[in-house]
Amino acid sequence: MKLPSDSSLSRKDFLRLTTGILSGLGIPGVTSAADAGRAEPLGEHYLTQGLTAMARAQTWFDAHWGAGILAGYYLCRDHPLDAATVAGIRQQMDTVLKVRAEQFSPMKEGAVEEKHIAEVTEALRPAMQGGLRAHGHAVIFAALATRALRDAPQMARAVITEPLCGLSRQIVKLKPQKPAPGAQGYVGTQAMIEATFDSIARFQSLLGHPEIRRPNFTHMITHTEALMSLEQMGFANLARAGHAGHRAHISAPVPTVPGTAATGDHQRVLESVMNGSFWSDAANKARWQERWNETSNPNGDWIASGHLFKVLYSYHRLMSRVGDPDKVKICTAILLERYLNPAVRGG
Image (cartoon, rainbow, N blue to C red; front, top):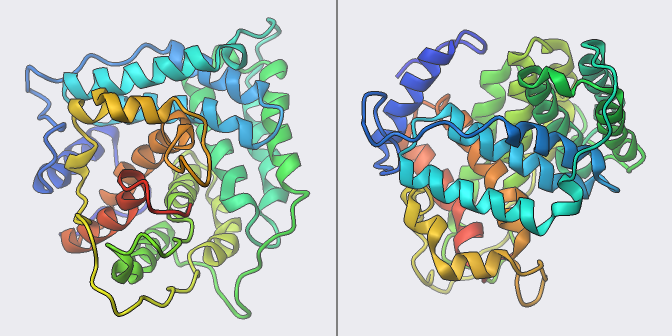
């Protein structure tokens, strides 16, 4: 299957292409555009609340909660999901809003100026220079925030955008992980996406071995999508400036796998999460509402208050650009094992 070039997908073509690939992978939460069971779109108040929570973040890590809400909104808006799936996602988003109510409380009004939107991407460039910082979070946050600001321009107020710029300024202070000597950029965004999926597929031998700590698959995906998104929004040069850091991100070595047989059900597919029953499952909801703990609850609110929304949003956008269904299935299993098996540690 030959895919369109990097930025040639219209929204209509993107939905058609994505629906075809998702349907081919057997995901029940995906409907055709004419399906009566397709969900109504989420309210745009999720955009204003997500941006507000990102702006209220005291540290760059705290921006996850607002970024997760933005990603959940776009996950449901961009893809033809059925009503039960969207209802489950919405319910978990509302839980995040309730549990973290203080961070989502409205900020004071101010003058709306379009120039403030561009300031968010301008502040990003220094955080991309010299290699990879904070698993690509400066790029991830700036791309999501810029997309949301364009869709909710009434939020282009200095009281919102200045703290968003501050997230990148926090991250630039971190020591970068440098790419390997001689590492080159990519010929284009499509090559970057293919490199990401090729890199993750290398870890297939880890499936069923939860005792082996994983590298940061989650942010390899969200970082890749964020660079793609920057290009699609018209920031091609800025996206290319992030290629060196991206090379460093996907270069993690494959750990040694013991000779013991793989254990458990590790053939994870998107059907596992893209359905209403996953989001309404009482055990999942109870686990997600508990604070993350490395020892006893590695799948706590780290997952459903931010990362699960973001990784599903990013992964759905990226896999529509990969023409090899077998590779997509392998990468899906590797990625989702982190989210569905509480014994698996890693990013």
